[in-house]
Structures are given as C-alpha cells and as structure tokens.
Length: 222
Image (cartoon, rainbow, N blue to C red; front, side, top):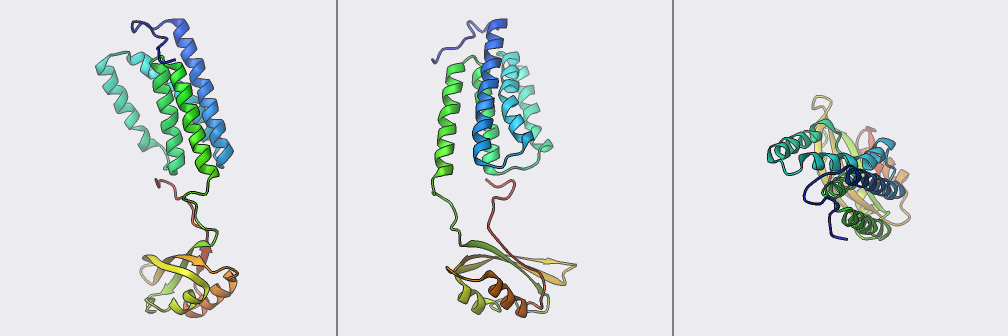
C-alpha cells in the first residue's frame, strides 16, 4: 500500500494513466464530500475535481529537477493573487486536493486514497457534531448612529433587557465621518422579540439603519 507505482524514478505511460485516473477519482470523491455539507459553487467543486490531477502532472514533470521544482513553487505561489478569498473550509479543501495530487504524482496511489478518505470522514464528523457551533441565539447587531450621539452606554439598558450577553466589538465612521457604525455580538434571551428590540433601538439612534443577523463565516477567515 505504501509503495510507489513509479519504479526507479522512471515515468511510463501506464503509471501516468493510472496516477491520472486515481487523481480524478479522488478529486470527485473530495468534491462530493464538500457538496454534501456546504453550498459550494459549481466552479469550486470542479476545481476540487481537477486540482489533484493537475498537481500530479506537475510533480511528475519535475521528477527530481531542483530548478524546475523551484520554478513550479513560484508559479503556485502566484495562485493566491489570482483567486478570491475563501472560508477556512474552502481553503482546507484546496489543500486536501493538492496534498492528494502530490501523493499520486509520486506514485503513492493507495496512500493518497486512504488519506483522502480519512480526512473526509473527519470533516463529516466535525460538521455533524455540535462542537464549536454557535448558539441559535447568537446574533450580530449593527447600529448606525449620528456623530453627535454619545453612543457609549446609550443602548445598554435596552440590550440588558433583551439579551443575556452583549459586547461592542467594532466601531467605524461612515458617510464622510457624519455617522458611526457600531457592531455588537449579542446573545438573545429565549423568547425575545427582535422587532421589539429594534424598535426600541430606533428611538435612540434617530431611526437610522439597524441590522440584526446570524454570525457567518466571513470570506478569508480561518
């Protein structure tokens, strides 16, 4: 299982075809696993399918050539400048596809398949478990206030009434400095009416924009 199909560092047509077929099958498997758990785009899933085979061919072409290896490493480093930022799980999927491509490129087909299966099972178990999942009561509250309003403590009594916990996590100016945007991490009390809370907040912020939504994984966060 841990032996390579490439003997004595010599690449043959049969070993190339076997490695490519294994890379595509593993890529399909990884893409299928990620399609079960996330609303992944078609483009991202296609990338997961093709990436192992692409990396495999690159590794086979390098084949011990140090100069070519350095050039390839430089080329791969440019990929991050041409791609949109993704969530932590999306980046993990890319690295998993690349790792399996490295293994198949060196001829370790069974090892690549076993590694992909193990990591995919761990991924599914973590997704199904409740570990690190945020409470359904967790919200992100954003409040816009005028610049002449002393926002420090002005909403505390309302937030204490409607939430179990709240924390001001971000403050920034907008509209040429005439407005402030406040961001709170809050945990709503069971049975709390979001509309009632927002109506109370509107009376304090001059009826400016307020939003209250669930926290999400932001692109580019790990």
